[in-house]
Length: 84
Image (cartoon, rainbow, N blue to C red; front, side, top):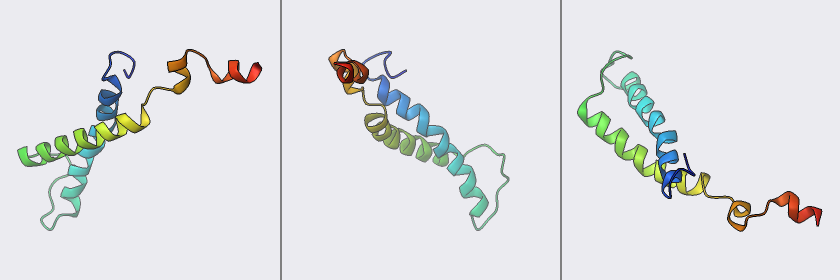
């Protein structure tokens, strides 16, 4: 996904992080003062907060984890440079 289009690495970061933020919304319901059922529909507020946090951290993860390799940009790999 990161090589599909110029902003693909950011989309890959969002897709990687966002499910974890949704799970955190469910876990928050477990440790809340008023216990909620584990499998329930998220409220609009919970969904909006997890989406915002997922996009925010997803952009950071996409920028740092899915950066293009230096070897990909130069057109040579590390094996070619060490063999010479």
